Length: 197
Ligand code: VGL
Ligand code: ZN
Image (cartoon, rainbow, N blue to C red; front, side):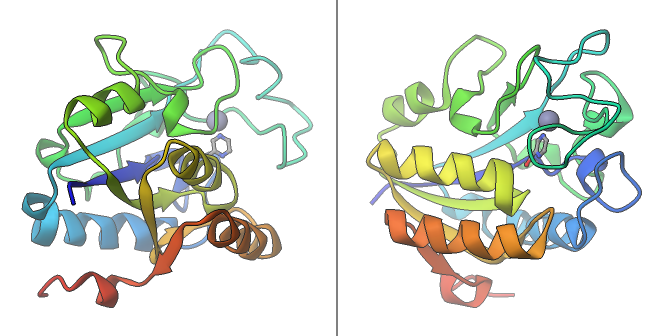
């Protein structure tokens, strides 16, 4: 089993006080930072995605002045801004592969993201022989959901670490966890990972 960790959108704008702050986002950032400090070395590869939108564009209807918080959102994660940076708790040096997505058009799945060299997540994982993936980050009901469904469809054995994710809304987050589980992902908690703390 060759396992990678995928850290989804742990960015300032998705944590409390950010443009699209998710309740529990900061707690997730701190928990993910701790998990990286303890366990990054146990993974064949650590990947992280960032939502990375254009400034002078509605990014294909993703930004709206009257957002519905389902398909349209206030301006957030504009590339190169503090809001789009990884949360400062994360030690970026423990991240091997940086993916960006959502530039000019909406993109919820990290599997639609690309590296600076234009490689996709699937290409990177395949090249390293990765067959299983632990997923953490933000937001449960949007980017985590879409990424996990794509990961399962790509044939990976996926574990979602439920105490290292947080969502935009409680009802859609619960539904997303059920959908991911139904699709074949395994829901686990940090304590199931067997990492010493
Ligand atoms: C996300 C809403 C808008 C996410 C991205 O990362 O889950 N949510 N853009
Ligand atoms: Zn976005």
